[in-house]
Amino acid sequence: MPSVKELKAELEAAGVDYSACSEKEELVQLLEQHIKDAEAAKKAEEDAERQRKREEIRKRVEDAKKAQELAAAQSAAGSSEVEDATGKKSKPRTATAADLFGGAAEVEAVSQKLAGGGKSKISIQKTEIQGEFGAKKFIKP
Image (cartoon, rainbow, N blue to C red; front, side, top):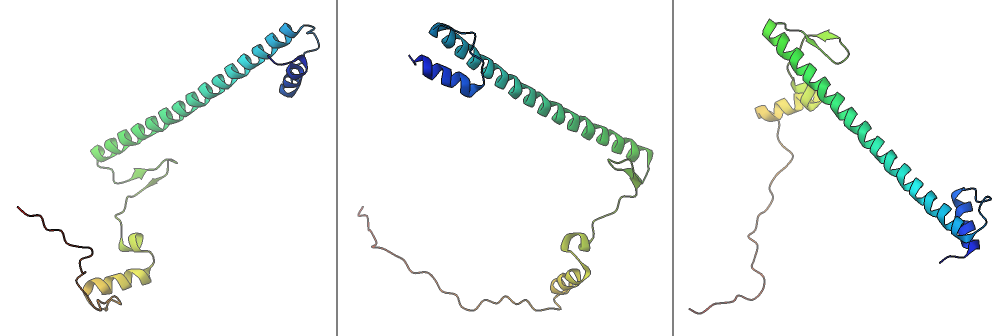
């Protein structure tokens, strides 16, 4: 069991006022109560964080469902305009080679390579069959 000095040092380090305590048992009870309160506060904080994350996920799911419903309603109505998250309407477009490969120079280079107009810098220089390593073990029938 810790001494009175050790109990007072722990209470002081925790920032707990122990001036009203005169007995060692009171100091022990005060320290135990502080530990329980700290654990309860930590658990409450963790629960609040979990709840906040759940609410955030729930909101994202609701937003995604609304976007799906809106897209379904627009496609059913035959509208070619799509509303984004900010509420701005724009016409959807298909992906182009520039979207996939970068700028116009890269697109042109890829197009030439695919068409066979440009030679690839990669060439196979020499191939060999890898030899076997280690002693061969023969199993007699």
